[in-house]
Length: 589
Image (cartoon, rainbow, N blue to C red):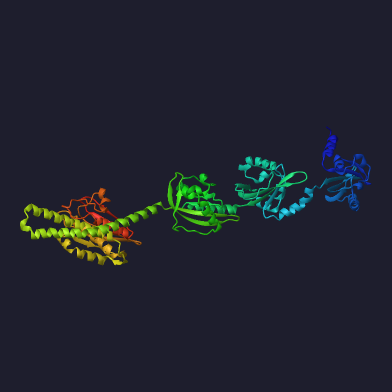
């Protein structure tokens, strides 16, 4: 194909009207688009004045343009009106150019006219409209090319308008999403519908400098006479995303399981503690109804409680004396405390629930109740047992006194056994009674441990002298304590240090205290017989003895009393010892 033929082909294939007129204004050439747009046959236009295509008010405009072209002036593209054969007015954009021969002589004019469709006529209005939008606006054709943007889009993505126009929309999308985006775009054009922002989709934009940022995108179809376009409103949600991530981090750092539920009862967010407590993974819980975590016997009425809370949302703290239970994945039920808090979002209400497993607390409470019942039983039993024992001892004493001469040696021995046994029983009952009374009448006061220990040593004077014991006491602090119970604690430990001494070795006892912040650690160290480590825990259990009564007298209650008194003060008691090397009893107050 020669060049002239190719040029002719291009002109005839153009969608734009191309007309050539002579200096006197007659048409000497027109292309196929002229015929198509204005409804004339070519022969109806050739050699006819060009002004037959103009309405009356545009004739002066044409005369002025031709005059300017004669003087060699440049004419910008202008918008004008043309008339079709059936006298319909058509808005067009027009480019006038001079036509010269090889000698540079002006021989006519070329006119290129492009029909302004409704979309083109509305384009300027659309541009003005989208410029007022608070979000970045991008309009894309069905090939995915950007054909219109606003200033917000330039600011957000860092491109100029000219750098974006004509480019594929994928220029604004991170590379890792490109494979999927093309199919998503085609899918939207095959079923165009408005898609509002906030559709819980993870969307990202890419700036000119390569920086990625989270976005929300609202899509809407835009139909014109010729084609389908899509408008996209794009919003940078970096700040909101940061706030959400911060909220999630706070949620994860919470010590209690946290569950966030929407108005339909669907779980929208949880933390790791929730997974640990209920045994479900995050994916197994998100989107599920909150009733999944509630035992079946309470499940039916729960939606009604939930509905009432959303009708009157307010903070409900933990510890409201409600009997509540949770249900684990394995079917295990357990007692819980729940704190509810409403979270008001822009267009909806959520509720956060902090859930606390109180199984241990419930168990401790039950244990404390049983301990109180046992102490009450011990008190009543020991109190009521004292009277018959007194009676038995009195009658044994009467028999020994009044019938001494009538009883043989064996009978006398039996009476001695009965008297000794009842005496031991009496001591046991007294010890049990004392154990049950610990903490009953407790009264906290400032206690000077130096004065208190001096009273204890004075009371044990006879035992100390008999054992030839030496007692060294460091300076002791003044502390908040229960004086009666503390006196009993020192008395028991000091008595034991004297009692469990080595044969032919005088006991040496050292009493000291170390203070650290609000805690005092007392030490009562002796040089006695010592204790094997395997018995360290056993000796603090009531009625537990390590020796025969013939070797060391006692009831097996004293150290149990010491443990109870120390725990009453919020402390702990333990010992360090080796057989034959003495013992060191330590306790904190």
